[in-house]
Image 1 (cartoon, helix red, strand yellow):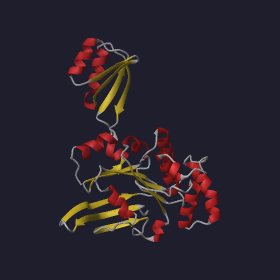
Image 2: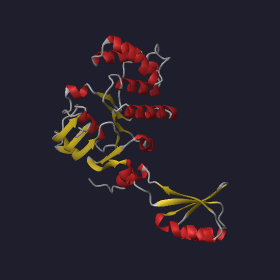
Image 3: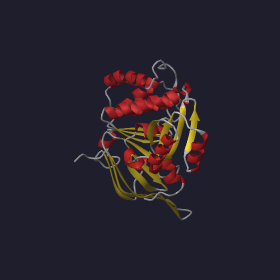
Image 4: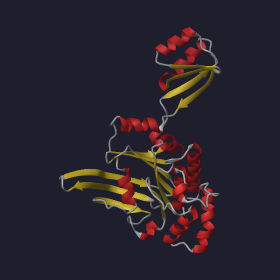
Length: 311
């Protein structure tokens, strides 16, 4: 049986405010797994427990109860740390350094031989599109450039598990696409990627699995196909639609969009056959019938935005 890259079993973490006598449950009985070579999104609103969970799996914090394994080891075990690349949401680099010097410094901390680092660093800078800026001090970098450098630092030791907290923060659309491509390349290399992001449309493009937490509890976990499933509406394209049949369809709940290239009608799956037969009888030619998939954003808002999620 393959060992999961990340395992949380009934993990609970409570923060205590001693002087106020308050206890805040950051995590309550949270359980999930991330399989090797998967790209897994860890989602939730602000204050959901994402940062606490990432801090625990990295060994920065200790859980009050539960069992955690990272690459088969307890969090903080040096054998796990050697195989993890980490990009936190908020980080700061020495502004007086250049990117090559900073990466050389981190390579030395990671125990990489100087000759190996000297070969690897130019490759990484090119990978994150920072080649050509080798002589520029980090203090002169834009926010997006600093983010790219952070990603390069996370990949420096050829990690088996890459943990990315908001990896596209500060990047323009082209930069976000570059990061998506890098993540897919890491997956193709057999690496596991565990990422947190608020840009759900991007998550949907690259992730195999999604974990959603809210108020310290697991709300939903599964593959994208399991979570989204087939949609409950279809889009029917027709060449034309006379006004009166259009009014009749609208009265039955159909959404009608007229464009220069034809008419698109959105109806519930249960009304698909009835609608198609009605369109044929009205003299319209049906060009296509396309299922409309549920989106990750719709699911997220349903589970978290309305408070309907359950552990």
